[in-house]
Image (cartoon, rainbow, N blue to C red; front, side, top):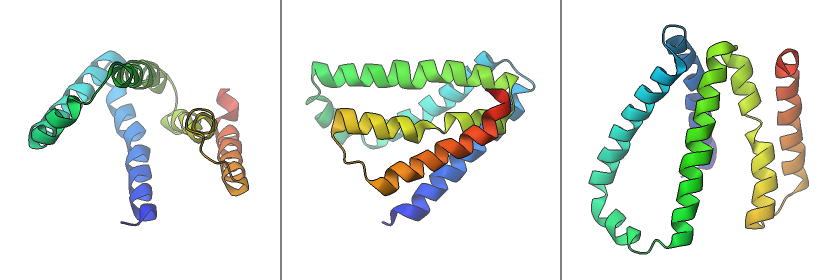
Amino acid sequence: MTVLPWALFIAFLWGLQPVLLKHLLKRFSWTTVLVVVVFVQALCVAGLGLYHSSSILTELQKFGYADMGIVAVAAVLTMFASSLVYYSILQQHASSVVAALVYTAPAFTLLLAYLLLHERITTPLMVGVALVVAGVSVIGYHEI
């Protein structure tokens, strides 16, 4: 499987998300939209879990306390807490600006992957992330 077309497909879907959400946020509160979206996601995840239940149950037996701690941080901080802030600011600001600012994430990923996973940082990678951050800064300049 080639990474580029799939990564671009994901980028398209992530680019579509703030537009769809902003449409809903014009009519409903951010808390209502968040709860309904997460509920639908939970149904999808539950279906996936049922489909793969035997392998999931086998792998869950291998989970330790450290693994559950990582899951808790990922679920509570990086998904739930960030969603609270994201939906709130998306309701109040232009979706193109919010999405652009949120998508400075590669800069943080680069730094955290280096510090926590000891991944190698190459010059082309640093230049690419710098260009992304510079571009996002230009887009979001009037909002900062």
